Length: 193
Image (cartoon, rainbow, N blue to C red):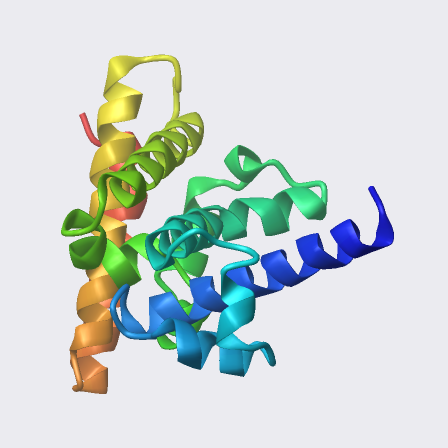
């Protein structure tokens, strides 16, 4: 790959990464192309050298946001499914994750937006859900069973909903109570019959 192509690719990735963060902070409709490009230090005209439309950028940014945690772990040589459920729950349902919306779970930040979005975004989100459920299933006892997948889906949904609701609450004690209550409950799921 030539130098100019490599630089174009790096710029493209920088725009997508910035958009993924900003979309998690402000929602899918929360930031315009002009503001995003200005924040990236580029012109609006440069946007069309990288994307055919805003919708194309949104789909790429959502895909990047959904896969960011997995990529970070894999870059460190850690298989996401190797993280024990208890450790994963503690990190996911933490005050830090709650407070860093722009770097956290795209589903907790954007579920309603993604549900009302384009087919391209919904396809990306669906593929991400499948991967997340497979990873969570691998953390369950007897991961090859239908019961493990059922519990993985329940745990994932509870955790995503709890994080989202903890972000909604402007009462810190209630927000923390939501995180702690669901954290304790999810940790009991693998043992539940």
